[in-house]
Image (cartoon, rainbow, N blue to C red; front, top):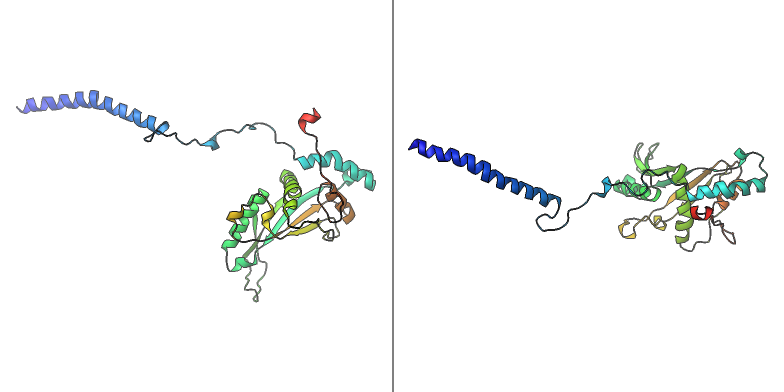
Length: 258
C-alpha cells in the first residue's frame, strides 16, 4: 500500500506539476509580463520614458545664436564705419556676462541661498558658483568661509542667448521702464546694471517665489573706451535711456536667405 500511495504521488508530481502546473504557471507568467508591458490590472496604458528617446534635432549641428549672427553681419560693419577701425581685430565684441547675487540673510537662513542658486540656474541655464566670505566681520555676524552669495559667468552661445532674452523679453517686463542708465560704465568698456526683481524673467514662476531679490549683471567687452562699448551694446539692442527708438536686431531667417 505504501508503493501504491507513492506511485500516484510521483505521477501527480510529474504530470500535474510539469504538464498542468507548469503550463498554467507559464500562462500566468506570460499574463503577468503582458500586464506589466501593456494593459495592467486596470487596463490603462503604461508610462513611457521619453528621456531615452532621441529628439527631432538629434545629430544636427547646433544653431548659431540669433544675436551673434546679427553681430557678425551688421554690428561689425557699423562700428568699423563709425570709429574708423582699420583692422578686424580692433572691432570690440562681447567677452562674457557675469550675473552676481549677494544674499546677506544667508548667514542666518542658509536655505535662502539654495533658493537663489536654483533661480539663477533657471534664468541663465548654467549652474551657479557659491561665493564665500573672504574675511570675518563681527558687526554683521559674518565669519570667514561662510557662503553669502552666488554668481554665474556666461560665455559663448549661452552668453548670446542670455543677452537676447534679456533685451527682448526681460527689459519690457520691468515696471515703468524708460531705459537703462549710461553712467554705469567703469571706464574700461564694461557695463554693470542692477535688477531689483527676478520676476522679470519668464523662467521664474510667480507662485513658486518665496522671496523677491535682485542681482547685478555685468557685460564685459573688449572695448578700451566707454563710448565704443556704449555703441556696441546699443547696436546689440540694449535699450539705453534717452534713445528715441532702440535698435532692434534683425536677422534673416534661413528660408528668406535661401
